[in-house]
Image (cartoon, rainbow, N blue to C red):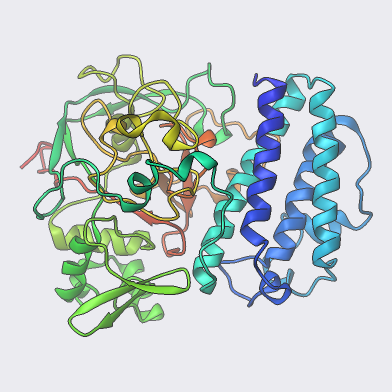
Length: 458
């Protein structure tokens, strides 16, 4: 159980991040266009308040809602997505006051000393807000709003800032399929999933179970923008044989010829970064690509996506014996520093929490390497895996039943987190999941060499 002081700090910090992400937007931008992949931000802010109320105040203490119409407006399981623009939403000022009032009531519960149940639901609500805040960042990118003006900690305005913003740290490869090559990982029995000593675990991570893995290799880094540009320029989007049936149907329907935020200029490519166009950063990971695009790239490159069990083993193994105890993070059991610069230049493990305002080069941050030498398996960019999002053996839904269960079998698993993911949420066992056609998230991928029919490496 997390301490009351930590819970209070998290609730306050999450609220500060929410306000930072919307403070500069006009009222009309808080409503925004009707799109399948975004929510009206004004609705989403109210939904955050409703979620805290539902699980900490109403469920935990029996207090009534601060708004009689809260369920009608903000219950995401009852209010269809397409109707959220049509609701009689309160004004910006009233919505923010509702969120502030609820947050103060939650802090009061914490300061009075929460029991184990209350602490669980406060943590759930903080992580829920963290996930929505990450989605706010996606929305700003989707709609072409400026980079968010995040409240950067004072320590970032010193000698550490070039490390976080330039991204040129560690060795750099000379090209090829992957920047830093592959690492061989022996086979064995691996315990996939969360262990029971975690202070908080989502239901889809429960519980660790034995998985037999054959020997495999995995790329040390994610696929770069330069590598993906070679796929685009090699007519990868037009070669039917590179796409599975669903992927080709999506590509034709979307008329996709390149990643969603790319455009050709002269002999090169530009990438839209929020509201500005920048030249491709060749050694940074390709981002905002969906599962179909990642899968087609793998066929073009003669590679494959790792399964999520392979990904977790590459990130969490502590020795060549996969059955040995796992690491919570690729670099060990100590969580990443937050903000990252507190650890010092030589110890920064992961690009998290939004402070870099973008991805770093794939060779950056060697202090975050896994036991097998894989880099940036936490932070920088979410990574698609080959696996469908399915329950682990013995799955039982947690009280927030809508979190995982409705999405089994229709989504693909992503692992690792992105530059805008909050570090307090993540660990090697954390599972993200999206439909394979979504490419608004900060998602990329790393690859594996193919297997022969006998299961061994070529």
